[in-house]
Length: 163
Image (cartoon, rainbow, N blue to C red):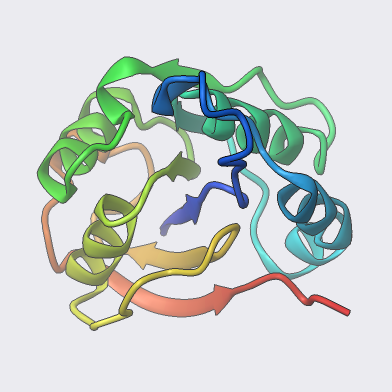
């Protein structure tokens, strides 16, 4: 059975007014959440074969940090089309770029929340920053090109354990 983990990027900064939205980095809370979850993600979620991510700075930082949680992962694949992508665009990206037993997709709300909800036919609401939705897929391993809505079964949502 194939596995999908949809991740909303970690908390980003609005501090730098001269930066375009695409260029906004993570803020201190986002970086702290990444450190807090370094042990929890690998213990509670499957290891990815590939990480797909928006090419925006905040998702790049999040995906690069995620890739350090497990050993021997290829670098994340950054896709311009995932920047502020809607659910349909996310599904298309998974069909076109998904490979292996487990794919992680790191992106932006509201698209990631809508895509996760539609894939597992469950209203998940708006995902908090650096949340991960674990979905098992009916389509089976290696068959990402035929992925459709409602193909998934909800497994869990993992959110930062802030102290």
